[in-house]
Image (cartoon, rainbow, N blue to C red; front, side, top):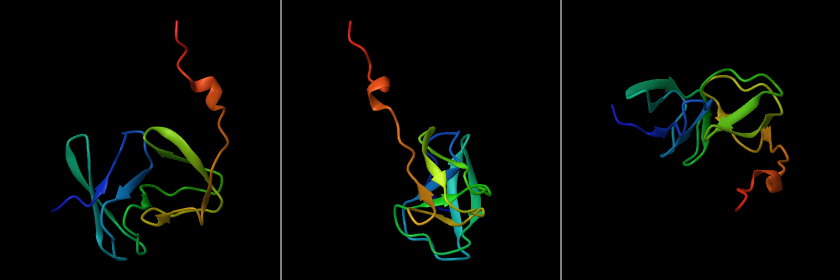
Length: 101
């Protein structure tokens, strides 16, 4: 099998597809050094995300181990995660800056 998606952090609940994935095709990524396979429930465009688990409405979408946004509707495992079904969550970036001594 050939890897066609990237898991950025073990805490993530989405993977980023590095090629366009057709509905019914395998989304293949590596977790804990082992290839994992997820079936795409719909077409996922290049560089877009696929849900690794069922995400109910209002669920946190995690990528890079960080909150990317929240779902605006339920997203089933294997479905496309995009701006059509998630919204950004405002952050307080000033509080995240590294303070210099």
